[in-house]
Picture 1 (cartoon, rainbow, N blue to C red):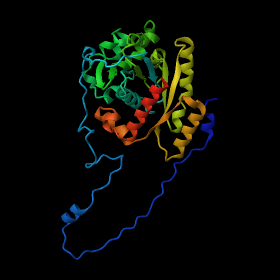
Picture 2 (cartoon, rainbow, N blue to C red):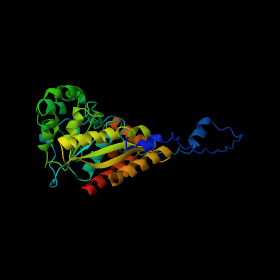
Picture 3 (cartoon, rainbow, N blue to C red):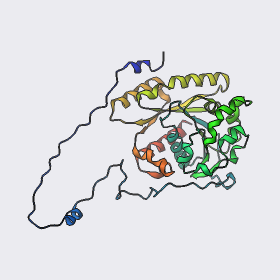
Picture 4 (cartoon, rainbow, N blue to C red):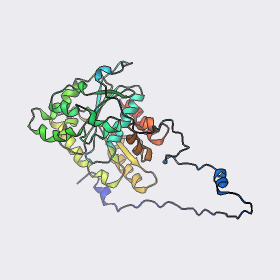
Amino acid sequence: MGIFDNFRKTKKVEEEPLVSQDVSRETSQSTDDVSRETLEVDQPETVETEEVIVSNAPTSSIPDSYVVTPIKSYDEKLPVTHAVGLTKVFSIINQKGGVGKSTTAINLSAALGEQGKQVLLIDLDPQGNTTSGLGVEKNQLSRCIYNVLLDDDELEDIIIPDVCPGLDLAPSTINLAGAEVELVSEMARELRLKDAVGKMRGKYDYILVDCPPSLGLLTVNALVAADKLIIPIQTEFYALEGVTKLLESMKRVKNRLNPSLEIFGILLTMYDGRTTLSRQVAAEVRNYFGKQVFETIIPRTVKLSEAPSYGIPITQYDPLGKGAISYTNLAKEVIQRG
């Protein structure tokens, strides 16, 4: 039986209806000959909600278009201003897609960088959402993480430094889609990423790996290379179904390839406190995983979805919004956990 069988037996919970209010409007006919233009000028400005981008909202942090990150070599990296301690390698993983892996990879890495840490983010997903979400034009890349795994290139040869303060990126392109098949015949195929990451230890405080939504060889490489795992779980019913298989895969890798592998934290994402389902899933996850669940919860907001289309993390796109505050709090919690 699965760990969430109890939860699956519950009936489908409908969202709580929003209470609608009847708003009375008073209309009167003026005898003065006032033009439509004058009436429109005299109307008060519309008050905007947080979720809508409007003309009179503060826009100092929002670019006019997609921000393209310059592609530099690792030799051009800005000097590190603090002593780097023991490097921690976290793989952000869930075999189900659409649960916020890439969003978390981008925004947690950027938030850690803004907390004064040196961070390397490795995009191991052939879709390359993390790469494009940080403003990197994939068609301009001559090499990516594929060349590290299959051609034995050094990791630092493909790193794009300083895509954000304190954050470097090892990008992905569509070439990585063939790696699953090509790795099958390679020697030590499960250890390719671990060997590459090992050479970067001591240069970064944190190395984060954004995994693909599958349990293939790329994900196995991420499990073997990681010290611990961060597992985003969307607070919706179907998001729970893949967790059991993920834990089984983690157990097999731990027994055979990476004895030190553990869960660092479970992250609740896309949380909507207005719905019974979100609250019930969050309670179920906390009941099973206990203290492994982060105190920080990532809310469902439009701004978090918009930020990648501008090529910047939420901490730059909407620094005072709920999403940015949540990922900043998550970064502090990650640091505090050690």
